Image (cartoon, rainbow, N blue to C red):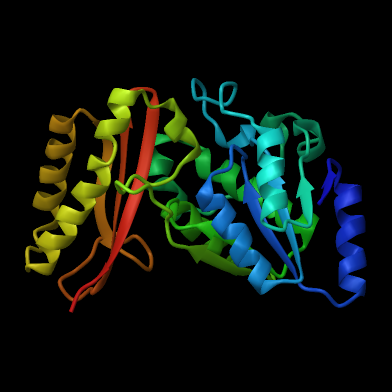
Length: 283
C-alpha cells in the first residue's frame, strides 16, 4: 500500500492507473477504522482495479464545542487494517493541504434543503463541511465510484444530491450498516461510551425496530410514533436529539401512500452522540 500526503502525489498515482485503463474506487473516512469501513474497502476492491482510502479529520464539519480536537486518531492501526483488506493507496492530507485558506474564507459547497434537516439542524454548518470536503476529495482522486455507509443516511443523501447537481461523473454506492452482535451500529464514536453506557446503547436500534413493527401493523400516526419513541429513549437513559419517520427518497414527511420509508434517530449517551436508521418497505 502506498501512503501519500499531498494532492500532487495522489494525482500522480491515479494518473498512472488511468493511463493503464484501470477503474478507481474511493472510500473517504475520518479514520479510527472499524469493520464497517473495512466492508466498504472490500466492496470497493470487488468493483475497481484500484482502491484509494482517505483519512482526514475534517475541521470544516465540526462545530464550536464539538470533538474535533479529541476525535480518535489511530493512523498506525488504521494503516495495518487497510493493508489487510487490499487497499492500494492511503491518502492522509494535513489540514493545510486540504484547505490553503482560513476556514472563514474557504470556498464551500452547500446542498440546501437536505442539509438543514435533523443532523443539519442540530449541527449547523455540518453538512456544508461534509459536502465541501467530499467534493474536494472527488476532485483530487477522480474516482469512478465512491462508497459510503448507510449509517449516515442523511449524509449519503446529501452527497448523492451534490453529485447529481454538480454533474460529477461518479457512481455513489451506499452499503448497509455494520452492527455489533447486539445491534449497535459500528461507529468511531462508540469508544466514547463507558461500560454502563455501552450496555444501554443497543436500545437505540431496538427502538427503531419497534417503530418498524408498529408501521407494519398499520399504525401510521407518525407524530405519535415519533413522540413515543423519544419518550422511550429518554426513559432508557438517552438524551434524544431527534427521531423522525420520513420518506426514504427525499426525507419528506410521508403520506399514507408512501411505502418506502426510513426512520432516523440521534441521541446522546454520555459523551457519545449516536446516530442510526432503519429502512422499511411497506406492503
